[in-house]
Image (cartoon, rainbow, N blue to C red):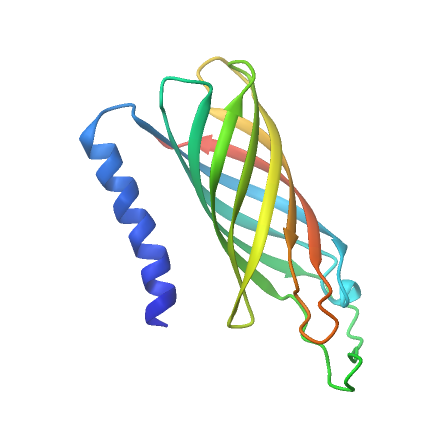
Length: 177
């Protein structure tokens, strides 16, 4: 529990420190997204869901902007089927997924961006490696409202067969500062 609290508090403190040092040096967005599971051993038990994400972007004066994103997803819907792994044990479903990812966003224009993030994904009290490429656009020049399509890949989600987990996510982001 202490580790999870630290994972959440430290990025928040870093974000506040960046924001206090120089005005307009960091932008932050709150993302509301829906996701659809693409592949998983228990796809019927976690076909899709919704989530929230907080993202911080560091303005460097170039088209590349370092990015830090904290995401939490909850899967909705369940076919109530108990599935077993190759070892005969029941497989755990993906009821919720938290990720702390870092990477870079590349702004093609003032309206269109691409990003690539990677980092730990927290699932069933295990830490797994994940990555997330994204493409998005802003609705206006002020960049207050954005839309983003992301692909999320979590490696070795299932321990016995080392199967991976993947999903698409469509989000709407609101600029906080």
